[in-house]
Length: 387
Image (cartoon, rainbow, N blue to C red; front, side):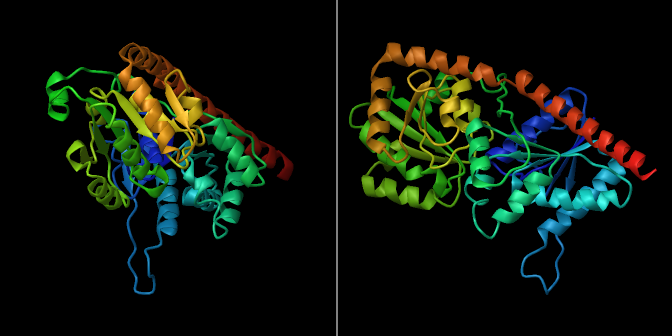
């Protein structure tokens, strides 16, 4: 198949997942055409069946901001026509589902029927999508997609409760590359971050407010009173400055390192003892899954789809959103009990096996084929009616 994939190219979960999906599909012999405003961050190598089509920006004095939606729609039409796409898969509803609908209508006038699959990732529904200035367009766009998927049951249920959805939403979980994300012991690296044998706690995110970075720091300040541990914060974003200032206020700067964005995050996860993800909203929790694949137990909030990934009392613990005391208490229980920690590490890896690429990617292939067949049947019926 020739598959178009529209995504944001950033470190966010939707962009990461879309890129990994494209790579996985290309390795299975499909031709993948990424359509984005720059190269996705996870697309770091050359693949003979992967092509990138960057969206150009149109500058004109009348426009305060470049018209991204219009440029993207035009690029989709161009790629679909000249690369003969079989299907278009858009990730993150806003504005990609709406733009895909526009592109699809343009292509129809040229005699091209392009099936559209929309994957809902989380904040496109639970945060941005609920804004009254966006909600009607989001609802319409979802209903106009040929097939809609969600990355968790929680997000599916939330979408159906927030909007008047006419489409059946199929749950297809995010996945993890278990070859890349596996524990590879590195004593030298561990000694860099834990020179005196301290436990290592890790958090990784895009440092947005919804990730509640300050909760990680507050919980750590309680953990360190009972357990010798250092905290590594991976990523960057608008909340980093506030997080740095909080470290200074609490006097924990010497034990906390801000590592910024890291391409080889699996190397750091491989030396970690515990991962923390106290998010306000989390439709799935890809960062938690990647940690679990590296045999790192997770202390997380119970937001959204996190309990579908991080099983309370088995692969880690889930806590109420904002309950820093409980997060610290459960972290201490794990870090102080080596036998328990060893069991949880094993459990985390075993749970991650349920989300391996070889199980999830075929589900998308099946969806693509179903969408292509459905559109073909609709076109055939229309021809028969008109004739």
